[in-house]
Length: 194
Image (tube, rainbow, N blue to C red; front, side):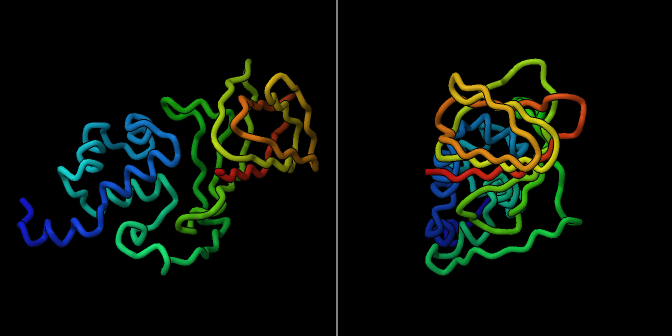
């Protein structure tokens, strides 16, 4: 049980409100955020409403899901700076086929050391999928293909990309991609929210 004094001190930071703003800014439902963090939707709802104060490990799980640091919840936005080096050896490869997430590629975040990046960048290893699983999100997307062949569906347009090709598109339009052939297909994916 948190004392009234500590509770009053923590209220100033509006942690629950900041979690809700991050979630809504990404267009996620509580259940979807739960899948990314390993926390239940009920727990996240209590955090967002201020009924419970998350522990630092719990808040860290939430922060990592949004590529922000703990300072996002405790430091004034005007004093935070964006800088980070992501070393190849430190990158973590995440599967794109986690439960509830049908991404057609496995990926490594290229800016995970930066808190509150203005864009998100990934090294993607595209999979051969039998059909397109389309999705859409706010903002724009850019893909530079390093190796292999990739089929991109954007609205009703089908495009084939080869190593060295790039594409830039409005990500709010339904789109999907899949590897063509048996050779590895790797690219850099950059997304920028509007």
